[in-house]
Length: 314
Ligand code: MLT
View 1 (cartoon, rainbow, N blue to C red):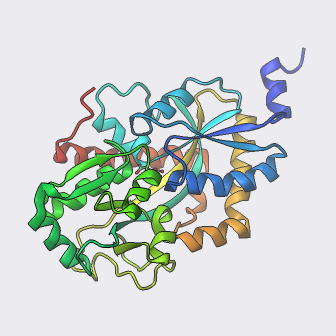
View 2: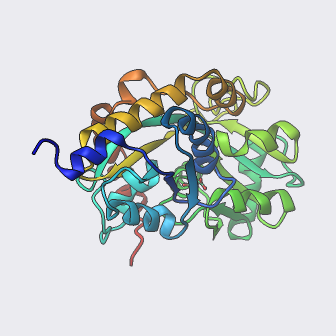
């Protein structure tokens, strides 16, 4: 009888709005990047891409939900270095397998970590920040988006390189963490540059160093970690698009085409450049490219997490 119902649906997909699930609060980097591409994807798909922030368990609540959703293309996830790589070593009871339980669509962006603090912290550059953190010990507060989030794991690296143990303050995403940095309620944060570039540009927070080899064109006056005296601290992280496992190929292809269209659109390029996000290499914005990349990232982060000795301990 020709096409099965599933295959027929796949051919006409999408016939109603599609939900993009963001695993952290609004205003953080994953949300910011997601909303930029959601806008363009809506145009290519001819249906609205609705952004839904599903917070909890450092992004694992949303990831689990999408991994168990119907594989009909109407709900997909923006996962990242935390939910799909670091989580594997961090959470022995992780209830989804980033490689087996999703259909990868493509990488959305990569971007470096930027170390920032509240504006009135008495330090002027990375060296004096490090001195302050050492001197104040656990009196200093380090905001992050929950154990295993990018802001947590990448600041663990920073803290272990400089040898400090601050008091950690978890939030539902770095959007709310950033509000408290701006309000002066918490001291410092390691966040993806796309989440903090506008505030750094506006001078409402202090930005110390960008953890990559080159300066970010979006923050030309902010030194690299090497320039600021901490060359060991280099961290690139990423956001990527995932569907539930067993999603029919025509749906994966349509969503991937919409993603690639969105990444190639001049508006996306402008917004990404303003914020400091890098458009990924073409080969990684494919389902197969992303699958290999996630595997390599799990292998890269597992020893880092083991060495740091942290677990989610649930
Ligand atoms: C966010 O969007 O809030 C961040 O990506 C969370 C994190 O630091 O992992």
